Image (cartoon, rainbow, N blue to C red; front, side, top):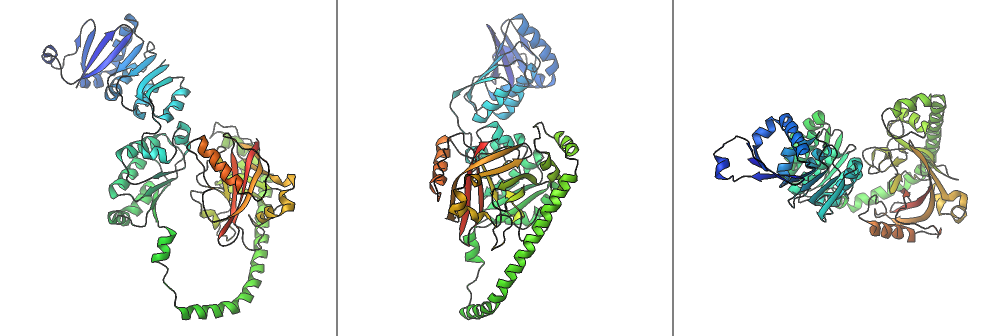
Length: 519
């Protein structure tokens, strides 16, 4: 491939010349220089970046050139390293109507003094990235998302790509999806879960390759779908152990509840049912007694853990612990006692307090929403579990919807066992009770309760991201209108909320929402 360089006024243009004039052909690989045109072979460019950098630095000085233009992104990738240290250039034009790829954007950011770029299509998330480098981007055509993957996961800003914990790849998975997943893995630093809907073996292999390529470890791949490709099943049987051990990537298949019921739970014989009913009748009386004994033990055990946590924090050198932890982050640490908590359990992310209830606990977070249903803060097996943050929330910042879960075991009183109090009028009409306090490593926050309700099991109130402001307000109005009481609290597009969820009975959930009113 030959690169033709043209000089006109203050602009230097680089064009891909696959068909050369006869006079150029006769010169084979010789580089041609005239008053306003130059020709270089791609092989020569790749071997002589330093020489060309010095040459073009002198050339841009001599001709007062401050603008570059590239015919294609392919040409841009080849040429841009030459201009890393050339200070004259302040604007770049990408002439084709191609999407500006992240790998070109990376090279662009290494060029000194660039203040303006123009391209056919610039992905939305790049605007935020370019703004950090004081570069003004102009997209000649509007583009919201480059692939279904970016749209499905709401990856419209650079921050979202950087902090996202979990993503979903939906079938059919296209090359555009895989290209954007590659870009995502290159930028992201917090990925824990990759959900894939009905992948093919080739899809799965490519996704694992991308994760390995960008050194993402301790990743869970969750495959969804009741009819999984047989090739995928065989692939998992053969390679799952080696992938888990070598690359720390765990792959699981998750079937729907309906599929499990239809295929695993066999019809029970009526005779057995009657026998079981008779046995249950005699066991019922003993069970009631066992519930009270178990609850007493739970209260005593949780109280013991709480006291041990308090004693540890008081006895710890929280200032020294905070100082050590601060070395790992640029964000100022505000609550040293949360830093001390992290020495007890590295999954600790905060502390929750709800007035006039027993809720005054540390908040944990794991890579899924099941581990702390069965483990306490010491990671010991415990039927009480512990209060935990949704795995899709980012513990390092205040998300638009912070979701916290906990058990509400029968007559228990620990974890969310006293959250039922919020359903009593004497409780929710007391202004003192309407403030929820949530502390994290980086700040303390107060949330004003605006909605309390009991609802059949659903997940429509567990949204953490929104496509736009209209969708966000529609969501806020939905959960606000469900409330058993009108708290007369206004919400807007900038509002950020907290959601507490626990079981109310076997088929319904108790949900409490509060809006951030004080940092």
